[in-house]
Length: 151
Image 1: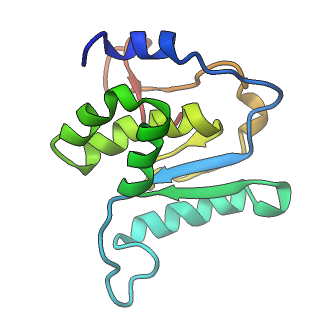
Image 2 (image 1 turned 90 degrees about the vertical axis):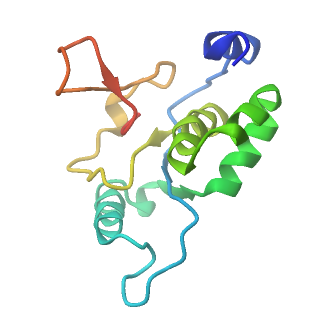
């Protein structure tokens, strides 16, 4: 990408006001539903989403948003049109999901979690609204690598 992601953030500095939004974002590919499985084609996704709804309940003001390829494309079109073609040229849905989740967090704020990431407690109050929070990758050198499965 010309200039890279660092230049994109310089051109589009995010503005945060107030508390971290009570939004939990997920991405999923555009796959048809399998009969007798539920809302998702993979059972672990269903279980993980239930955990997020348990620990980040709607009665406490949380919204759970599942983004698909079309929504992510529209986010890129609105926020980073200069990178849209690069986004569309990515080889697959996983790569677009990786890039699209940054756009969603930039546009809406909140928390992002992969659909196979199970919530074990509500940590919303521990996250500062004005900073990016990432999970350290345990399989790599401590403190040097991060994951994008939970942000």
